[in-house]
Image (cartoon, rainbow, N blue to C red; front, top):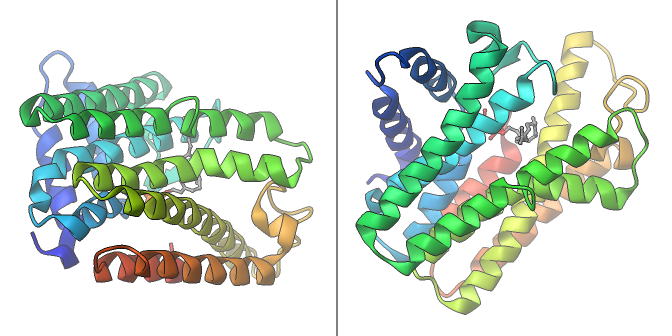
Length: 290
Ligand code: GRG
């Protein structure tokens, strides 16, 4: 597998997975496939593959696990866009799932993707018959659930229109965005049977990377709003208050993002093995434009 083109392998796996599926239930597969194939950076699967790749050569072996985490991420985006949550019309530059298929099918497409991910991970576990696959599945399902992404989303919804403190903001993002990012890294490491000392370093790396990713997302959000409005945004009144920018301001956030990225690189440098590709991706995430 060409490490510089991992997105292509993930895209192809997911495309094939949802192609020509279903009979009476064809529509739900179309809806799931629509959101899966509509785009996306595939950061979580790539993080899993590259972390696994620090220790092992056969990256293609864990492609189903990597694709599963993208299915979970895509389900969360479909549900997040629903009128009952963020009520967004566009996602990944295209109409959101519910705009194309209606609310009911969009809810079911999200449910379908989550369950399909569990199915693929369990099939991988049965086929590989190894304890590491069970551990990785547990890490991912826990990160996707109430102790992770779902829990973070609940805090986000409850915080809407209210002032929250820094600890709540941090908890919210650690769970909503950070948990799945950290799980991608840890699952890759577990599947590759990384040494215990490296696991601890990668856990810290995952936490810092998740935070840097979220702060960068907030920065891009404000910059996007400013471009749309053609003027500077006052984050206190013109922008969703519960983000890092409204707590720290744009410049401080940019600095925090750079410092976190530097920390991430130092952590990767302290691993027992060389990981040039993961370091490269870490820097790309800091400099990304979307
Ligand atoms: C509905 C349970 C549930 C959770 C939703 C992920 C999420 C939780 C909400 C999305 C809201 C959001 C925009 C969060 C900011 C960080 C984030 C997850 C951005 C989207 O991830 P990317 O940038 O997206 O990896 P692509 O489209 O590239 O896959």
